[in-house]
Amino acid sequence: MIAETLAAARPDPVRVREVLDRSLAKNRLEPDEVATLLSITDPRLWEEVFAAARRLKEAVYGNRIVLFAPLYVGDKCVNNCAYCGFKCTNLDVVRRTLTDSELTRELVALEEQGHKRLILVWGEHPDYSAEEMARVVRLVYGTKKGRGEIRRVNINAAPLDVEGYRVMKQAGIGTYQVFQETYHHETYRRMHPENTRKGDYLWRLTAHDRAMQAGVDDVGIGALFGLYDWRFEVMGLLLHTIHLEQRWGVGPHTISFPRVNLASGVRIDRNHLVSDEDFLRLVAVIRLAVPYTGLILTARESPAIRRQGLRLGVSQIDAGTRIELGSYQECRDDGCQDLAREQFEIHDTRPLEAVVRELAEDGFVPSWCTSCYRVGRTGEHFMEFSVPGFIKRYCTPNALVTLAEYLTDYAGPETQAAGFALIERELAGIPDEARRAQVQQRVERIRTTDERDAHF
Ligand code: SAM
Ligand code: SF4
Image (cartoon, rainbow, N blue to C red; front, top):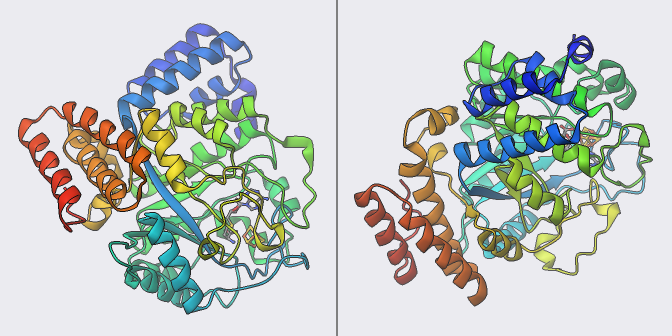
């Protein structure tokens, strides 16, 4: 069906502009409309697509960027995914699961940098049961150092059964991410040997339905770009979104679109690698296709690509990222990586503070907000956008308050100067006078007292 829809698409300028207008009116696009955008060949029309994506991003999300860090907990894996350094046949990678005391040291190191939101990552292995992962989630929430604490824990791990997702929900997880990797059946079979757990395409495809059934209503989907035709994968992500909307009344909370990177013991087939130019195109098309879904762009990408991705519609990035197991506590900032200790190579190794400073200087508001999830507004992601004024009443104030916390507790003088100047400018843009005064007071109390975590 995807191939036929793509083949039938006719990207003439009139049709393309119609599709862009529907997206700018904040509609989720239909498959034939997305196929139209994906089929564009004229560079001038692509420029119109980029311009529309930038406008939509501004209109829907404003300039907030949510920041998080990944924490790899264990790299044992029973699967043999062709592209991954953790695959079971790779004997070069050091197999390790962090002990509780190692985990605690990692958490303290992350908190001391200012992180508030984590994504925990595991390979697929009997040692990593739902109960064990839930225990680690509780340990994370319970580990607090000084003013540091982790306020939201997301997960990227193997698909679970319904009972497993219930266990995770009780532990208080935020989003559970499972990437389909490729929506192309034949490629899926080639990448994931049939005699492995991950070889079961449908078990993976239905992971989010089981999560929803268990009450985990924040789910993340994704495709690993570079395994098959990028246009096909964008269509797969769209159809997956539509399925979740139709079945559960709510689409995915986030979409991820990692590109395949160098990894230990992996020889990447270069046939479908996605160029930077096409990558930015796919970011823009996904933004336009699903105006209300959060888009995540990780440190797999270089600072330059991430900077462009932010303008085109990305709403969340990781920062200060280290993915070698146990490496946050090493406090190395030489940017060197040891492939034998990580799943793949990353291309943005800047410390958190450098990313915050760049964002602030570029006019983006770094945010560690976890308010909706903690006051029970989960799964209602849509509300942020559908309730008039919600962003100005809640999202922007919470972003500014969490930024003030970061600047006061963790930043050096230069970042503080850039950050507080940004806060002043943003305050001026809050239309409701009473709300503006409340935010101003909270920022002031953060700067002058120990009061923290007062969210709207
Ligand atoms: N083991 C779990 C699973 O497979 O679902 C957790 C996922 S894995 C630790 C996180 C994601 O990294 C994978 O879903 C895949 O999309 C991505 N990944 C794997 N190998 C990669 C590579 N060489 N370059 C970039 N991303 C990769
Ligand atoms: Fe294991 Fe996940 Fe890597 Fe596949 S992608 S080998 S399941 S860690």
